[in-house]
Amino acid sequence: MKAKIQEINNNSITNMTKKCFQMAVILLLSFTSIQAQDKKAKDLLNEVTSKIKSYDNIVIDFKYSLNNAKENINQDSKGNVTMKGNQYVLNFMGVTKIFDGQKTYTIVPEDEEVTISKVNEKDDNAITPSKMLTFFNSGYKYNMDIVQNVKGRKIQYIKLVPTSGKDQRKEILLGIDVQTKHIYNLIETGKNGTKTTLTVNSFKTNQPLSKNQFTFVASKYPKYYINKLD
Image 1: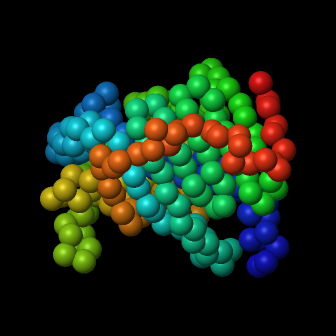
Image 2: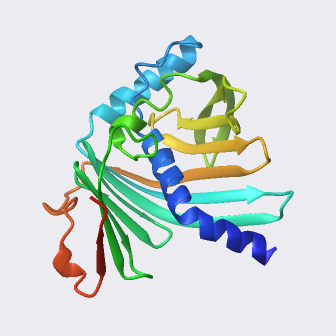
């Protein structure tokens, strides 16, 4: 049990940070370019899009859960992401990732290390808001799913199913608050039985941000090793 969890932890800081960021940005996705497969689903997603586009910035506090009943693995983590335009700051699993629009700064206090890298748009593994905005443009079928009442909130789910048999994900459920048109949660189920869930605990908009919000300030990390990859 401990060995399995440790193995996941050793391999997951980067992957989980990437997935978490992807899931967080999916909360902000513009779905207008998705081909309509279910008019009601498309109309609801368009309403979410319009609401999101009306905000100058968005700050999300979230809970991230990973569960696999077969392997008896249950992990919960909390994080937050601040986004404005093509910039973001993500705090997750003790790691801070800043993207200023050109470079990514990954700050790991445990190792006292900062990794600086340029973003290569041609790199399929590169994390950029622009790439995430096209995440669902192809390769998925989607339609309206169940409606749940969560603490007095009406949550409408939209199911997305990958069309490729090679995709290791069985399905994705996107929960939308019908009244606010904000995303409540996102549930991803893998073919191996692993379920990852991102739940929004706090969704704030148009917050007063520091002018250095998306700027890496080296003087804050005088003892850190600066690893410049580019």
